[in-house]
Image (tube, rainbow, N blue to C red; front, side):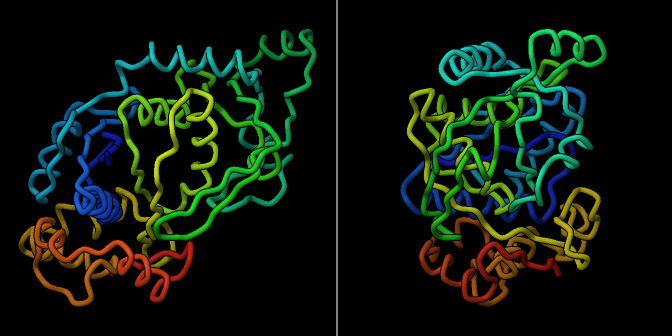
Length: 308
């Protein structure tokens, strides 16, 4: 079971489409299914108009899904139950650190610009926590063990992370009371039977953390495929602000959906020559091993692709 998991905060761009295409091809080439999950955990940024639009975009691009749409906004009870289980089994503590505090205390960032949390708030006394709570609502961190979690990524190869030394205790609940991404997405993947996760390589460092949560909640770990990021000419990850990579402008540039998909598939190393295609066309010739080898040979491990 694979997944589309868009955040409804804007229209799709080339990077979203590329990751969605690889996810769909991997699932379908192995006889699997796809679910559509709307990750509208952030109520302030998620817009109803974008929820409807993203489904229309997926259909227009030639994608199909077998289950859903599922929504995160009505999953608070499931997240609360998971939070309480993790709190009881692993331990959770309040953290009052700001982003500047974290940056000042941490060592150099690891892959994905993730700062290793050094445990600043872990050993505060109850009195110290009470005093700090007068000025700031805390977020909550999950205590991690001194253990290494490893997996073989279908694209990037072997990857491992020691949770204590390469991650540190990580957030599972925000200061505003909302559940953090790491908790919500992991609970949803486990409950919805997702066993194939495809996303940009900048999130590869999240996988060991999510494997840890899945283990504690009694779910098996999925297979992972972390694809190259599509970046702009300045080397920054494509975002909704990169207008030339937005779905509307790309349709204007390439003329047809099939030409657009063919360009993304070619730039993304899915096919060797550019031609107008649909996802179904690509499925007929998709080979996971050949795709992974092409990425490693022509792009490199944990390296981006410049969008053009």
